[in-house]
Amino acid sequence: MDYEKLLEKMIKEQIQNRGVNNKTVIQAIRNVPRHEFVREKDMDYAYDDCPIPIGYGQTISQPYIVAYMTDELEVKQGMKVLEIGTGSGYQAAILSKMGAKVYSIERIKEIHNFAMNNLKKMNIVNVNLRIGDGTIGWQEEAPFDRIIITGAVPSVPSELEKQINKNDGIIIAPVGKEIFQRIYKVKYDKGVRKIEEKIGCIFVSIYGKYGFKEN
Image 1 (cartoon, rainbow, N blue to C red):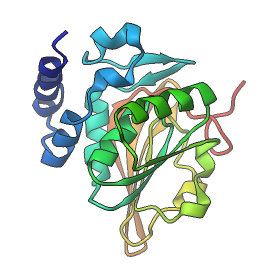
Image 2: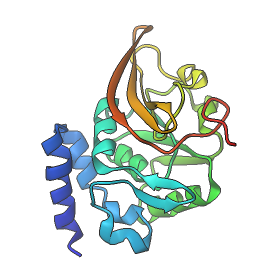
Image 3: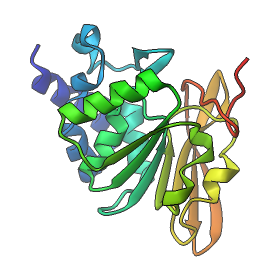
C-alpha cells in the first residue's frame, strides 16, 4: 500500500474539503502516519473515512473528527494539553507535533500499552501517559491550557473544569447520551465561561466518576 498517497488523499478529501484548513493542524496530521496507530490487520483501512476498532471496545476516531476537534482546540506551541482517552495514541501524537506538552489518561491497561508502543516507535517523547479514571483529570499537573475528551461524556466533568486555565483555556468534548453526542467547546476568557455547541458525532463512552457508569 502507498500510505503516503493515501494520507494525502485523506487530507484533501476528508479534511480540507470539509472545511478544516488550519495549516498547523494539517501539517501535524501529515507528520503522523495513521497506519502506525491501528492494529496490523487493519493497516490497509487506516486512511478510510470512518473510525477503526483497536480492541477492547475502543476505536481510533474518523480522520475528519480528529482534525475538526484539533482545530477547535486552538493549540499553540508550548501549551499544556490534557487528553482524556488515550486510545491508540494518534490524537496525542498530533498534538505533540503541534508543539504541545501532552498529558493523556487511558482507563484500559491494554489500550494504554498499545498507545505507549505506538508513540515509542514514532519517537514521540513529549507525551506523558497514565492509566486511570480520566474524568478526574491529572490534578498535580494542573492547570492545563487545553483539555480534549476523546470519548462521549454525559456532561463536561466538573473536576476537569477545575483544572483548566481560567484565563484563556479551552475544553473540547463530545457531550450527550451514549448513542449520540454533540461537540461542546467550553471557552474561558479572563474567567468568563462560554459554551458553544458544535457538530453532532458518535463516540464510544468514557466511563468514570464524572463520566458514564458501567453496568
